[in-house]
Image (tube, rainbow, N blue to C red; front, side, top):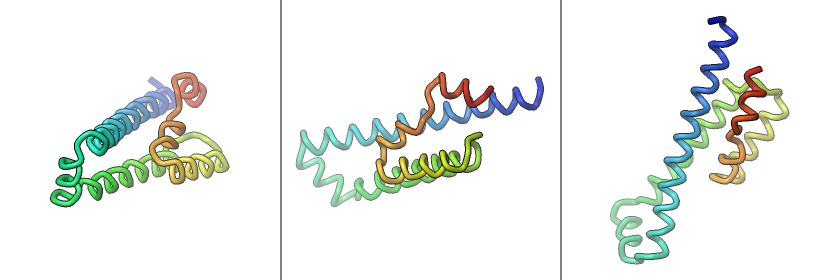
Length: 112
């Protein structure tokens, strides 16, 4: 296997890991939103006793930081696109993260 093929396989593998990380964050946020709207007592207990909102914010920042780092260090794209992707992740939050993740066609295009 040549070095280029190995690099493209690493990129695909890393993007799968990023997608899984984003799925986990999304499921946590959806679960938290359901709790907010369904059970006010549980929501108050989670927020005031366990500081769940701070934990979720921390997790969100860690995932955003990881995606931004990956965008700048691993993605084979030009600087302008990297800057645009960074703003997308920073200002649109979880929606921007989902918009940033390349689909299969874009992944194949990046690895060619």
